[in-house]
Picture 1 (cartoon, rainbow, N blue to C red):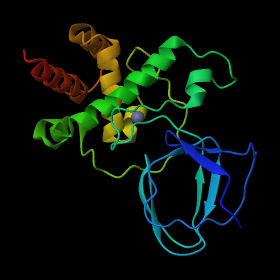
Picture 2: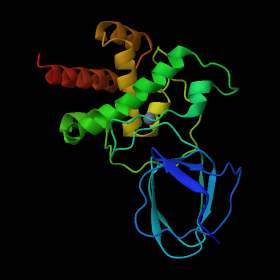
Picture 3: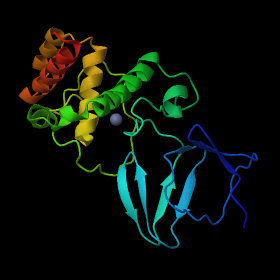
Picture 4: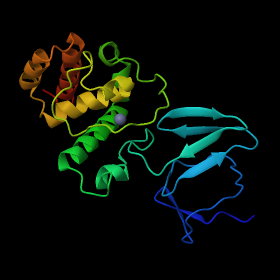
Length: 222
Ligand SMILES: [Zn+2]
């Protein structure tokens, strides 16, 4: 069997011959650069050994493993922290309708939160950061990413110790969500804190905002 009719443009793999589907054997040799797909890929491991890297973490693969890769997901790759990828369904909506502008900006700010953290990774090693956000190197649970309401500008009542339910997924998501509220509320802590008070949020939520605020101030030099 010949080479798959797949080409790579800006780290996006696509069918170069207009195919809708393709099946075949493929031998992965050595490293493959990070990429996304314009298509759904089902890969069945029939031999050898390998590691699959994704935003969900690092997975050691064994013969018989099947991985399902869907077309581009939103995210920031730690090796390319200046690039923010936005999943198409967040740009065009679930039924190809227009999605609200606040949703798109909320998602972008969330992803910029990941990018910000990758740019300031040393901060995640500090005691102050770890105390409020936790251990960012903790393995991601592989999860089916549910629809996240990035449109919300108000902090969720539950859970008590996080700004949103999604923030509970992982310390990096906790940071990205806290960053999103901090930015979309223009860093107005007084206003944010009175809302946290009304919603009976835990002390640690205030501390997350204070830690971020203090860090941003050191970056700005005041
Ligand atoms: Zn995220």
